[in-house]
Length: 307
Image 1 (cartoon, rainbow, N blue to C red):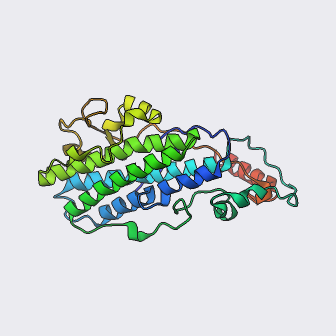
Image 2: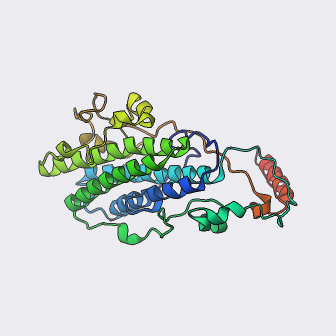
Image 3: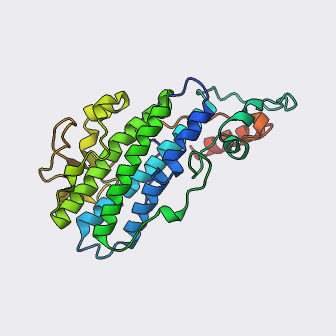
């Protein structure tokens, strides 16, 4: 089962301006071939289909716990997309009765993914940076643990390369923060799968890392995560389960060369996380509605009744 916590995995700065084209670029990290929808669904269905879970518990636990983190990555990237598409945080003072005849969204027809606004009001969707839908053909789950772990290593390496390229298209701090955090955590996952392959085959796959050769010390948005030791941590995402992966991630294993030194550790639970920014309504776009005041009043009464 999954437990949901009303936070993001990392704190994202509010954008200084709306940038729908940057949001479109960030869509690649959500619904592209190497995006978070791919990592989530590969690991999730591998964990569902995993053979001999009790006998291969450290390996099963590794895939299962990373699944939970990837679900949070889908949420983090999606929030980055909607924040960039919609612009700075605004006071929640929406009023109905806006003038629709003045073409208030005329600029949207020239944006890279106009359909993202026209259908989803600047929301995130499981698609890539060109609007092509994510699909199940990106999922590999063979039932062969070595093959699947090798595939996962390849997937994380491809994802890190794409994150760097998307990062280099970004000037807005919101999108760069998403990329910086995910570059560090993607390095953790690639390292974890490399160590799992090492344990089960004897081949020192971690010597291939970093693959691709990304020097995180040159990316400012990665620094605080490296300084706090995020590159050395795997989380269980559970109050009591998945601890056995410490036999793979831990047990004297060390951080990758080039990253701040230290021993790899398994942390019970989850990171502290950051707030979810609130999207304000747009009455002129019927979101939540053209005249939302009655809805807000009903919601207020329901909230008070729950206290």
